[in-house]
Amino acid sequence: MSNIPSARHAIRDLIFLYNPVYLLSSVCMLVGCVLLTNDTEHRAVPIGQLLSIVGAVALYQACLFAIGSFLTLARRILRDGRTLLILDAVFLSDITFVNSELLTTNLKVGLGIGLLLFGLSALRIHWITRRMGCPMLLHRYLIILLQLLLIIAMPAYLKRIDTGISIVPATLYCLWWAIGLTLAATVLADNATHLAPTRLPPRAAWVQPTYLIITWLSLILHLAELHYVYNVTFYAAMLCPILLCVAMVLHHRDRHVPSDSRAPALQVLMLLMTFLIALGTPDSLSLTILGISISATKLTFAALYLTVIYMYIPRLAHWLISAGVVVAAFAIFGPGWGQIVTYMIRAIRSTLSAAVDLLPSTRFAWGITGIVLAFLLLGLGLLISLRKNPDDHHPADPAPDPNPILHACTPAPQSA
Image (cartoon, rainbow, N blue to C red; front, side, top):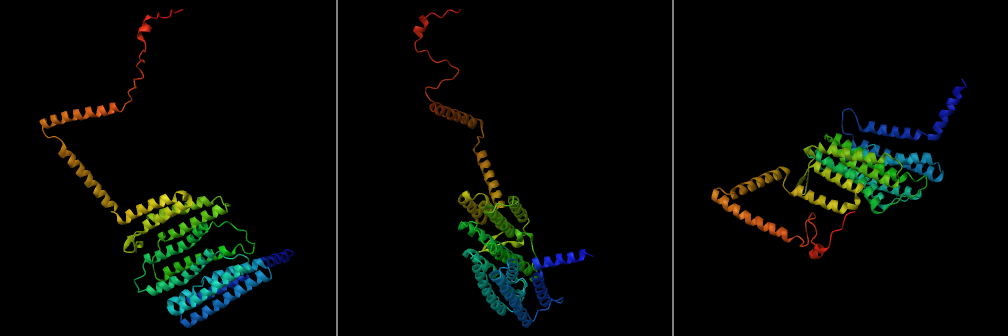
């Protein structure tokens, strides 16, 4: 019986240390929103109900942010405050999909409310990073805002162009590339500004990575959900931009924080997976840009080529990228592989036919040819001889005697 009080104390201490109540609260809010916006009959949710849910979620986010800021800044209870602020970051990226549902129900109302919430999120992120002593770098702040804006823009754009048959796999394939490029742009901007690791206070070291990663993962979830909403087939090739982006992030982190010996192997694995997946890209993902048809396989190979240059051979980037542009232009505007092979076969046949026509056909002609060749070869031999040094002699020949008469009169030495 003595073990029962100790077990109770252990559970109490565990709850007091980690305070899982906040996480349970967020799970309850998420489950409640999902149950209210989805039913088994797939009926459209009334706009009044959606507006009520949006209001409840916005109020819940405000409570998360207010309590988290109070615990972190005023009471210095860092663990609980960080938990609440991370949960707020999750909810501001529309993890409940309520605003996406509102956009698909009423585009104008959903877009207006979405932009209002976007503005409030931008102010919250700016305020909390300032107060915690880790002001957000401008390019990272703009990338986070771009990601939050894409969460609103993707369903709004698809709702705008939806005619029942207008949304095809290639449409969502472009959005997958847009998601991949947002985080890749952060890595490129960090390198362009020669960003060095900075020491931040422990309470603030998590802030910038949290907002960057959570909003990016939320983008992926929203686009995956749009596949379901518009019944668009998902292909593995759509993951290629995500894999390339992850490889770039791992490489960037390994350069500045070389703490994990497995990072280089993971980078190579991501690149290899991208290459293998691209080989099986279906033709339905081909894109038409400015009237030019570009296959998804070629697009992925081009991105893979640039990624490898950036990660491993940046010193030769100018030469390699220039060569890549020439090859890409030839691949787009030049003839295809089938046409190239056809032209080569025609050229070989024409050359052989011309050579056969030039050959002599009679004995007299062959005789004249032999005489002409004799003179030509004689002239060729003369040209070779004239290129030699006049002092050259065969190494086996003895050197000429400069005074043969004197040497002839000199008796030979007697042998012992």
